[in-house]
Image (cartoon, rainbow, N blue to C red; front, top):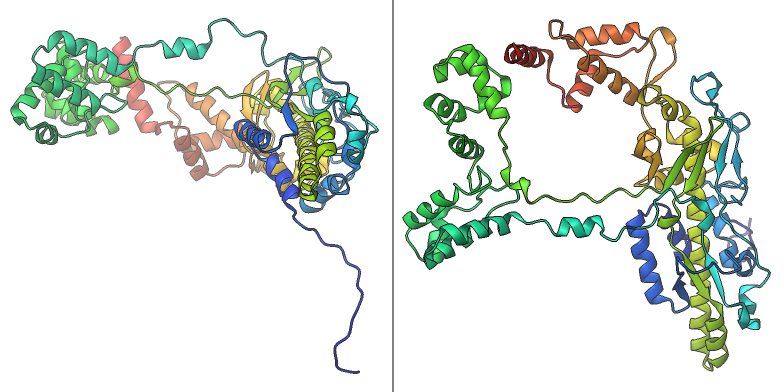
Length: 541
């Protein structure tokens, strides 16, 4: 065999992660807020993209399929994602205009016909209202009168997201609430009259945390203001009597003491208990009786009084308003017992590609660089609309299969939640597990039983006793919670007893697993629950 340089021609296939392909994959895992921010950036960067008016009538072409397919790079988007993430040709990104999922005929069905809930035969997917156009991207300037193209999913929701907005919004109501600092300043301006006291008082207010605790040493404040520390302590003592009770405390013991003083309940016995709060963790009543010099009944009454106090008085005024979770998908119950799965149309960006503007500037452009830039903008706009459409279709397909798999949960609650993993969804829908993971990350679904993250429906499996059917770990947690909540005060269930009860009901679970679940749910041990129930019974008696 001769050794030397030579030329060979070989044919091979390879996946190239182009920027457009990376963009399409990244869009799958973006949250609603992140997607909105990304679309805003694209609107600023691309002059051919415009935001559709929600109130204006939709253009004639909701999704110009011919225009997109004219560009070979755009046309290859679905195949590229399929190659990288396992999206099959059977239509994860296919037409969803009349897509119906039949639980009895879907490949890989795990057989919900044995469940007691509604039949899983009808899973309707809302129409995306995508209509095709025959005008290629390269001929966009041939008919300027066509106006716009739109990437839209207006038919993917029936308006479950809410009706017309009221005149006064929740944000406006919350913004009108008085803050903790304003409340304290009003009291300070009335009770403190000297300028030096007002200056110190303002500094004390500025060093409060959100819970109402003073997080700065009075000595540091005195040094900063150039005054005597005794004056700062005197002003602090007066301001500790402000409303709400317990404000300006420097630790939990002082906070509780201030509240007890406000109620005229800070006697020597209560003071001793406040100085030994660690005894409340284990509810060591005998030790409390010895330290405070009271009887058992008095000790239990004192503990109940402390529990009624507010350890974070500042939160009465200042509190962080949690942003409401906006679902990406809605699930509605059908009259015949099935489920309807719809996209939340209000969450989906509605973009227009201004083809008329493209035709005008393309015709006016003279330099080669200008024409290349205009062509790149049109290609990028078309690609973005295609990627957004694929994202919506994939979310809809995965959500529909989740609803079919967890039909028992929707019908009967957490007790019927089934063990499920990403592979089970990926095999049925025809996509890769990584795609399912991206789609279900930070996406929420509104069901008749509440709003849940899509990841919630993926739970680990716990083996059934004697080779029986496996159980969802979340369903087992719910059983544990129900058993503990319904236990009698005279018969508190230990972890070993809980294991025996669960095994009788068909759940093969270890004691350490029961303990782990109980601790994760914030449920005390059987010893602590027994003491707490005994104290409650004596208080009622």
